[in-house]
Image (tube, rainbow, N blue to C red):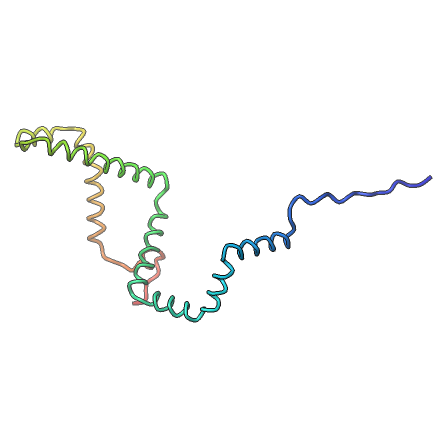
Length: 161
């Protein structure tokens, strides 16, 4: 009697091979003009390099790049939930400014001394001002501290002046 064959048929492919995907990508890049752009960039390599080097070698460009880097490093230290809370509070504060300004324009007379005394006794006003005063105090303290190079502040390493 014959022995059974151990035959496993290869499954039909459902996805393209790497070569087929590469050919499709190459064709799409060609159809949309990206290959022409890439070829032009390669051909003009020296000119583009000179333009980029000249632009990046300006003090203003270097300052802008360093300032953006500092901004991102500072933002990275703020937890997203706190930053979101701050942005929403800032948005609401900005939206509240116009109606309050319009209401102030409607009043013809200044509040006078009695109006100021009423404001001094307003508990919700003082609770609202308290975070602003804490922020101003911290800002003032930081502005009075000695300036240091960003590399020193973020890494602790002394800078070479």
